Every structure is written in structure tokens, then in C-alpha cells.
Length: 360
Image (cartoon, rainbow, N blue to C red; front, side, top):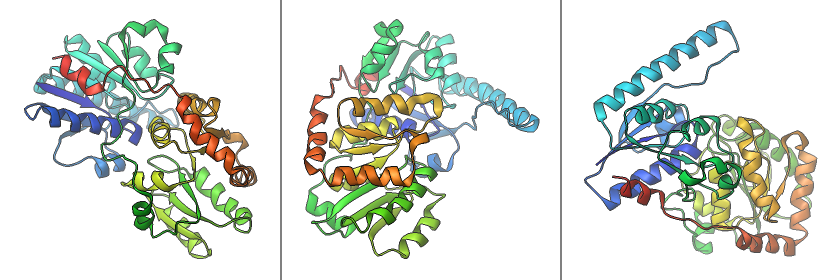
């Protein structure tokens, strides 16, 4: 059995794809898997080298300038041709697309070549590429049940699998997790994260918000900054008398999620899925672009009383500090937010890897 898994771009695409590959190999060591991914630094860092990997230098059409437009058209054509060559050489039995520019042509050409195709939509709002591919594929795997309510046209193809979380994502004993960060046990813990690549806006506004909070209560911070802002934040935190652990990217994020009292974060699909798994109260600032995916994701938690929502245009350090303080001064509200996660519909019909295995 040959399985081609196509993904790329962000951690939201890559991590569930890796989880699928890992689970398939655990269940059947004779499965031949090839990963087709993009060429970003993130992808090169987090994808294990033991997999068969092909990189596509895929990107959207750019209209910033004529030269950028020509380069992006060339890359698009190159991706198209290379995708066809990959399929003809590897001849997979099944193609699973996780979104990103690296997967579109592979899934589409797979349909033309009568190969079984599955797409996974990790967000509530289906992306434009997946909306097109949904017309052709055999199955659509959904991270959230709400997607089926929005796109009822494809209902017969849809299966609720949830978003495949990393296998090591588990709730860690509090004492062990505190020891991992060298944190005391009697201090309010704030987890700040902006997705796999970090968020400049959240990083800067939270940094300023600290000055309004540090005299109000005692707290400690786990901050996942991303690559770009790491050195700047490191210098700023060195001048503050606050317990902070700063990471560009944290592989063992389950340690942070296990001890955090509050998260300040974006609303990527995998972030929302992880918050649900850990039942973690959050202040969510959805990334306003990328087809409004994050706004729809965030409303799952806001509408069920699990999180506070701050829109990007309303975000400033004063509003952020006020929101944190509002929750810190109302511990019963934080407790209710954790409890409200029980109200979410977490029903899954079948695991994604079971769909793949049964499709052969």
C-alpha cells in the first residue's frame, strides 16, 4: 500500500499530517509513505528525516510587483509539473491532502488519474482550495463538526475525525511540568503563543501589557515567540524582574499546556484543538487575514464560554492587560471556563488513519 501525504505551509497543516504518517506506520510497517511538503524553515526543522520527503517550492500568485508576479507564476507552473511527475513515479494507492500550496495539484491530478483521494480540513471554515477539491475527492475529513453545518453540500463525503494531535500530547503531572520549567507551584502561569511561527502583534502588545500587570499580582510566563522576535524579547525580559521562560518554538508544548492557568494566543485550528484537549481558559486574538479561518475557529470557544475574544483591530496592551486582570481577579470565572469545555461536541465518527486503511 502506497500513501502520499501532501501538506505544507504552517504547523496546522504539518503536525496532523505527521501524526497520520506515524500512526499508519505503527499499524502496518509495510505501508510505503511519502511526504510532499513545502520548503519553509519550519518544515525543514520539524519533519523527521526518516520519512521519504519531496519538497515543492509552492507559493500563491503574488501581485505586489510585476517581477514577483512572474516569479510566482513560474513557481506555480513548476509545482504543477512536479506534482504530476511525483504521481507518475510514486503511483500511490491513496492521496491525503492537508492543505497548503504543496497539496492542491497532487490531489487534483490524483482524481484525474483515478487515485483515491482524501482531504483533511482542520479549520471550521473550509479554505478555497479545499472547497474546489471537495467536488472531486472521495472523502473529506473534518477537524470540527461545525464545518459540516456550514458546507452541507458536501455532507455525504464528510467524516468527523477531529484534528489528529501529536501522539506525545498528553496531560503531564503538575509537579513534573513545573520542574521542566523550574517554576514554583504557587504562581499564576500565563502561556503566550502566536502559532508555529509566532505573532509579532501579540508579542509586542503582551510585552507592553506586562508593565500594567506586574504590580497587580504575581505571575510567571511561558512565551513562545517564533524566530523573528526571539532576540528582541530576550533582551527585554532580561531587564524585568519576572519569571519567564522564552522559546522560539516548544516541541514539548504539552508541558506548558499542562500547567498554564491562562493562554494568550491566536486561533489556529491546532491551537484550538489543543486548548480543547487540555481544557485551558484563553484570551484569543484571531489572525484577521487568511480567509477568516481563525475567526470561525475562535467562536467555537467564545460561544461556549471557554475563552475571551479580542479582535485584531481592538487589540492593544491596555485591553489585553484588562482582560488578563479581569480573569485573574475572578478565579471562579476561570474555573467555569475550564468546566465549559465539557459543553463542546467532541464526537468523532472515525479516526483519519482508519479511513485511509479502509480505503485500500
